[in-house]
Length: 275
Image (tube, rainbow, N blue to C red; front, side, top):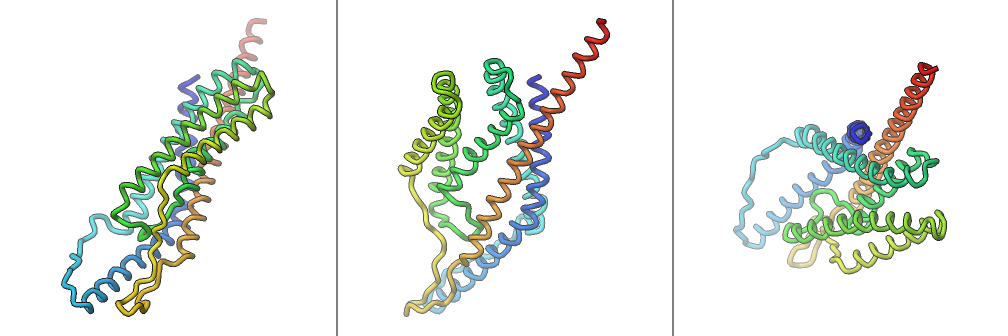
């Protein structure tokens, strides 16, 4: 049965990855294109300003290793599918572990309800909390000198969020026989939110949206990064992850239903044959 769960998870991840890539290609990539255009125009403005000030620094032109068309199609497609497949596999493993306890302790529980709850937990722990702590930004937003620190902080909150979510689920399941399912769920959720809140508070914060470029006289020679581009990128990024996790969870739940019907039909056939 565990192998069937893994297969269902991979299939669900594949379907979710394809759908989320189509959404990203239609909505996110045009926003990324605007950000790249801004970055190029700002670099030219900086060179012009430096040249006017008597500087001699030359930004060498580097040829593209991969064309923009390849990046937004093949590169983004492969990256999205690999991520979705990994999430599908992890989802299946997490469901297998969780169901081995819930199904044995509470046999009347619908496995599809467990999959739905796991989907919500996964979305919040893997994407929601890290995104809240460090909202995604399009290209041209962020200082190259802090990229290592930003990456480390994002990975830290992501790992911490997942570990704390697991601890919260364990706590809720441990408390359920003692104080009831609703109250134990509330306690587990509250403990998780407090723990991730403390974690976010101790991690560094970054505010690196480019400000307007000014000359020595303080005059604006190039505008700051467009706020609407940042806003659109973040909205579409959230929507894309909602789509991915929703499709992943629903497809996995449908696969569980099909497996349950298959087992029921098998028992019916065996029972009819024995008579």
